[in-house]
Each structure stands twice: as structure tokens, then as C-alpha cells.
Length: 403
Image 1 (cartoon, rainbow, N blue to C red):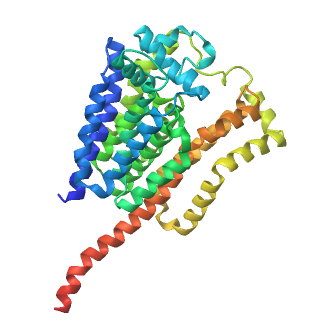
Image 2: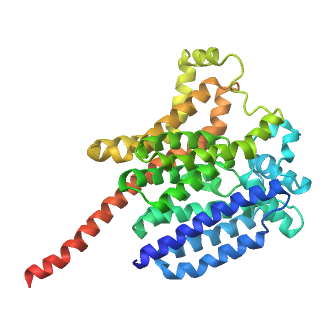
Image 3: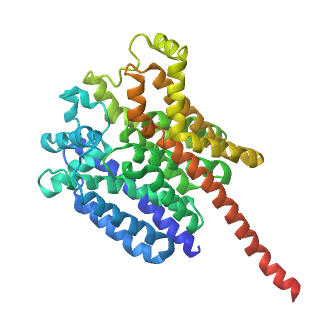
């Protein structure tokens, strides 16, 4: 095993460890205790020596998360969703010592049906220091983001392309990545899952990729409600990938069972409505908006302004690489299906359409933008790696021929 494979295996182990540690913390709260923040700290510190093994790649992750920590500690929560939804739920867990504290539906306007993977970690951090404030619990974002960047490191073979992936993620996500919103985190998990499906589809069975995918599917529904839709679409694409290996579909399917018993059934038991989208009159609202050129143009304008450049680039990519398009079928299916689902939601929303679009479309389409960007970069990474491998294989034979 060469050095790159060895460090890749170690990084994969850390990624799986952190994702499952986050989930263990969730289960721990159900049982009446929590994972102390010192465990997270020791796990992060344990990764630093690993970065020495592959300085060109892993130092970027260490430097990036050092900056994230400084940014997070340098400012309190002030964005509405972060302060009054996600971290208010965390505060409820901390004060009530109960993962399901928000299900009493106090202050119902703040979406008490939202899952609590990140709020549970924030509550654990607050328990660790013994008090709640508006700064320190924000560090809960770190152990959720850290493993997904390790997954990206695993997916990109060439170090420079991994660097471009990091820069692109920062550019696309902007401040949403660390300001306490869950959308960029959800988008990264969804995009990484898509790339793992592509890897399994085009490169064959890979145990590391499979278990990383399962761990991400386990996390997605517990990050935000949209994660359920993302997981469903990814699992749908897996049916084609594992058609001849149906046993591999068992664990992805099991993640939905875990989500239901750990969270969804409690929300239902509390009588909390997950959304008001599906109240009576869905068809009437959809037909009304579809028949209104103003509404159709409004949706098209907002979607194009947020994701237009990515879709145009994707079309150019499809034209140039039409012959190799089959290997990207799963990610194309996801991007198109998810986009259609989001547009359908805007068509049936009970809110004012312009207000709903202006407040959410840049966040709901993050997973689309990240998936397309990382897909295109992965395609370039694969072509570059194949060229490099071809050169390495032909070079010795050329030397022998000359001699």
C-alpha cells in the first residue's frame, strides 16, 4: 500500500469515526447523557499527526478548520434561523436535558419539527463548559463539517484538485457554511453522497466508499428535513448501481428506519405538522401559479439567478463528454429530480411566492450547485489521474525499449 492509499485509509477512518460520533451523541441524549466536548477535542487533535503523513493535502484541512474555529469564536449568533431555530433548539436541549424538548411545540413558529443532529452537539458543548452562551456552542458546526472535507479528500485523487474543491465549496457556500445555518452542511453531505454513488457505479465495489455513503445517508435526514428528500433520491439512484448486489441496499434502507424511530415518530406523536405545504388546495395552487406567467417567470428568474451558471456549464459538459455520460447518470438524476422537487414546492407554497423565493432559493439550491461543481471537478480529476497513470505505466516500457 503506497503512502497516498495509507493516508487515504486513515482519513476515511477519521471521517467515519466523526460521523458516527455525532450520531452516538444523538443517541446518548435519548438515553439521558451526552458525548463530552473533550472527546471531540481529542479526536480533532489526533488527526494533526496524520496530516504530517501527507502534508500537501491534509495541512489544508488542518489550516482550514483552524480558520473556521477562529471565525466561529470571533462572533456570536445573529442570523435569524441560526439563533432562533437551530441554536434555540440546542438551548432547549441543554436546559431541559431532553433531546425532544422542542416537541412541546413552544414558540411553534420556529419549526419545532426540525431534526437536531447539530443542536444536540451544541447542547453537549454547552454541557461541557457548564453554561450556555451565543458563541461556544457554534463550535458544534466543526465536528459536522470536518468529516465531509475528509470525504472530499478521499474522493479526489490529485491534491491540486482537492484544493480546487475546497476553494469552490467556500466560494459557493460563502458565510452560510459557518454562520449557524444548516443548508451548506446539508448541501455538502448531499453532494458528497452523490459523488460516492458515482464512484461505486463507475469504479466498482469499494468498501470504504460504501460505508462512507451509508454514514452520510444516516446523517442527512437528521441535519434538516430536506435531507429526507436528498436521501430518498440518492437511494433511488442506488437501485441501479446495486441491482445485481441487492444485499448492499439493506443498510441504506435501514437508515430511514433509524430516522423514523429516532425522530419522526416522536414528531408525529407530538402532533406537530412538518409542513403546511400539503394542506388542502395543493392542485389549485399549483394550477394557479402555472397559469400565471408572472409566477412562472418569478420562479425561473430566481432559480436561474442562483443556479443558472451551473446548469449552463453542465449542458456544455454533457455536449463534450456525451460518450462518458453513463457513469454520471446517478448524479444527473439527483440534480434534475431535486431541482424539480424544489420547483414543485414553490408552486404549491402557501406563503407569498416572492417572499418565499427571496428568503430560501439561494439556500435550497446549494446542494444542486455543489453537486454540479464537484461532479465537473471530479471528471477532470479522473481524466488527469488516468493520464498520469498511463504515463507511469508506459514510462518503464519506453525505457526498456530504448535500452
